[in-house]
Image (cartoon, rainbow, N blue to C red; front, top):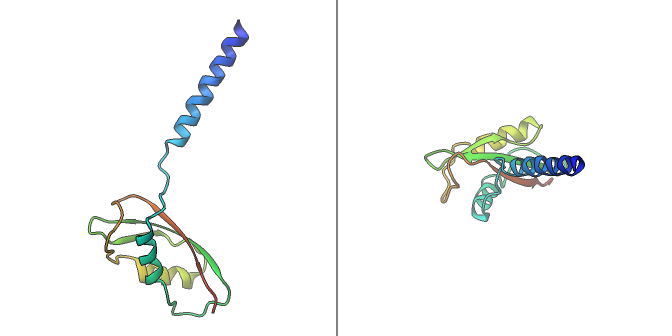
Amino acid sequence: MMKKFKLLALAFVLGTASLFATNGATPDEPNKEIRNQIVQLLDTPDFIVNEDMSVVLKFTFNSEGEIVVLCPGCKDKKVVDYIRENLNNKKFNNPGERDKIYIVPFTIKAG
C-alpha cells in the first residue's frame, strides 16, 4: 500500500512539474511577412563576408511598431553593428505583438 502511495505521489509531482515547464514564456517565430522584411533590410551588407554565418536574431516590437533588437545572435562585431544599424527602430508594415519576443534564424551568405 505504501509503495503505491509513493508511486502515485511521484507521478503527481512529475506531471505537475512537466505542466509548469511547458507553460513558460517561449520566444515565438514571427510570421513570414516580418521575416521577409528583416531579410530585405539586411540584404546587402556593407562589409565583406568571407564565409557563411549563421545568425539567430532575437527581437521584439515597441508601441510604435518599431523593431527592437534584443540580441543580434552573432559574435562578429561588424555583423552585430550592421544588424543594429539596419534593424533597430525600423518601422514595420505589419509588426508583431508589442513586447513579445521573436526569434529569426538566418544565414548571411559569403560572396
